[in-house]
Image (cartoon, rainbow, N blue to C red; front, top):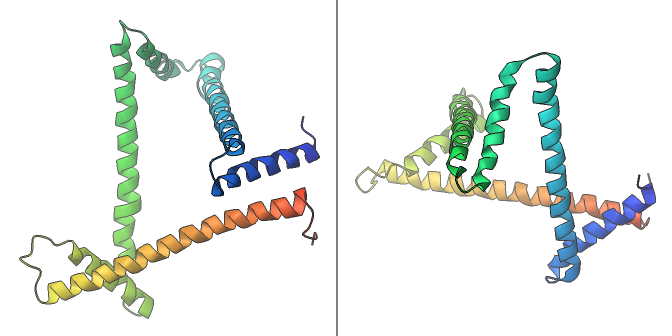
Length: 203
């Protein structure tokens, strides 16, 4: 096992190698990049083997749940992709995966982005915040009414307000992303100058 001090030095090396790209592409960054990709691939393989053992093999052998033979067989059939004569067999499990993934995605999007958006807009107009939310949602929707002839009159004014509402929302989302990245940077700086080079006094 790694000693705590060695782990700190490895963490500092990985951090500095990643941030060295801000200067230019260099050998140190390439080493850190390949190290990260290798560790990520190894972690994925270990997690995959662990999931097969705990979620499929253990219920099959200890509880006699033979239904797990179906996903295990489909998983094995995916490797026929690497054979020349039987590569077509891999299309069947791949089709199952794509169908299930599409169904889960559509259901999640309908619940998270569509139904909750409608539910979140059905607000009582009793506060200024609720007014801003409802007006912003309605005017943004009118911005996408392209079938209206020229979008004249009140529809044109509503579309303009909707465009400004979207610009404000995009700006807030961008600002939130920047703040999240700054939080990550602050965490790395605290690690470097708090644990690796103890310049920051411990509270």
